[in-house]
Image (cartoon, rainbow, N blue to C red):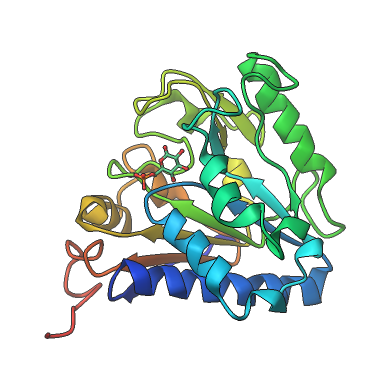
Length: 261
Ligand SMILES: O=C1O[C@H](COP(=O)(O)O)[C@@H](O)[C@H](O)[C@H]1O
């Protein structure tokens, strides 16, 4: 079942990051109570470093049993493990390499100098198998139903490494797909397919700043996922757009009526 998008608008990037961190802690705690292990998928993006910092700084972060959390990735740049282009690096530096988060079972996507060498197809198949191995009893056959995906959105509306009018949008051959000729460098990437992404219980699309305002307005205004891929990110239980006022600034008044200052 698909969930129609809800919208929450926070004052600014800092308030947005604090809100996302608090919701993440609550959602993972709740998932652990119901399903034993919790599963989260991360993506990168300009707001995410603030989210990771807010999570690290939250006095409530030990409410989660991080030893019973699986951390996956929604997309990754297929470059060498030490390349500054890797999405995972900042997350490790700010969050995942530190207690209590380091207790989580972290599953980074493969790098181009890792176990699959520079074989992008093999790396995509390998991460699909990683997902399949991590499924819980009530999950779909081939992957965990992520309890939450923290999904960045590009100014062009892309999410994960699913870009407007790009072949990857049509590739649901596996939960994780190889992406070539990405319009945003670097050109080779790994990404959840739409099927892989939309198996998530909750998807939170997180956007901050005026640069994201067109994408937010188009996605919530009814654009299709070929034009604006983030419009096609739909969780089975909940789809939540968490944005700041700048990112909400091009929404029509019936969708968001900003408070008078
Ligand atoms: O390339 C990517 O871009 C998106 C959005 O990033 P932003 O810097 O425009 O906010 C990100 O969500 C994705 O993980 C990343 O690979």
